[in-house]
Length: 164
Image (cartoon, rainbow, N blue to C red; front, side):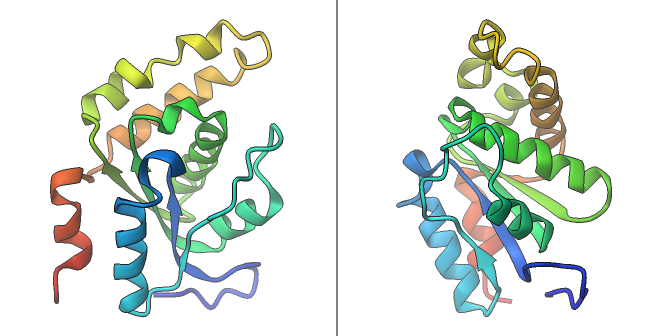
């Protein structure tokens, strides 16, 4: 599954994108363990890196150096501008055909993501003068990922834990 492209700074089969406070000790830890047990090289960021306004170079390289990204969309995912910036980058790379993207809707309805309602309502960011210009791209990225085939939290284990 891993790419042998010399242009990649990292070499991961899967990059996990998630909001740690909702998912790190539940679905993400189980998903990571399932992938690792099958020899799938997986990047899971365990550090709290939300220090600046840009995705760190380490994360940028890890995303670009991955074949697939699994985005775990949870209730608090959109409360992190960091997650939204990461999602924007992921969806840009997906449109360019550089990575595959698979959404997991963890305890959220895909239509809430698509229509940006409930916790996915970005109006608070629009009222922030420092964030308002970023919101249209975040909205586009959320709609794009909601339009992809994925799984709801009740079925996620079928895709990743099922023996083949």
